[in-house]
Image (cartoon, rainbow, N blue to C red; front, side, top):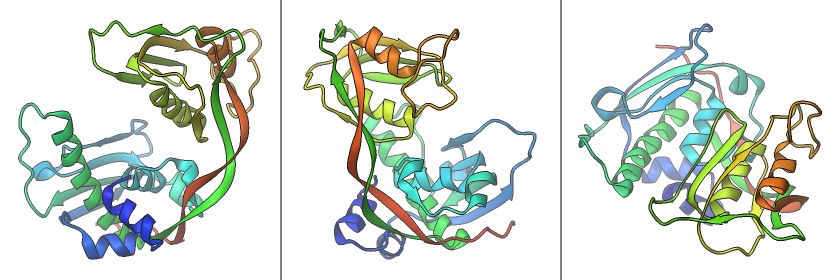
Length: 261
């Protein structure tokens, strides 16, 4: 979540309303078009005019998730079209972003965050988005160690931390913490995952599984390989336990389809 969203959340105010009054980065020009139905690739990057943001084949739910650093399950009240319709959005920033050939991690995060602030303004101005934060009880998972102990391999110390997925069937991690794994699993399962392992340190591992038709159900996929739940148990010596927890969600009060340029 950006620092603007955090301030709004602490104040208990509608996030968009507070952001518009406090923004430091906005846009000069924005174009919005319906995506070509033949385009199956989703893109979002800092390759717009003058270092602005450009997206293609993105749903409004995806745009909201990016702008406010939240998962789909944390956005409540989105109409069907906001999930199904796809848009190409290109924004030109109010101030040209000069992009060095090589950006340090912190500089890159700050640069991208400025474009996400601009995306918040676009969602407000062109989609009429108004939303507020609530805390609700939702299904959650807790990542814990199995009775026999974990099977994790300590990192070799030669590379910095990274974790990524491959086609929804593999997680590859280098020098990753259990907090990083819990976050990645949350992305995969569309449900909050809390790190309850108590394990400290960094680890190298690869987790392989076969996607199930119903990934929220901890069952195997017979004949096709292990489910993600079984793979976590067998390959890492960890498991996911179902439960309930209080989760921040963002409730949409108002949103409209945009007029095209």
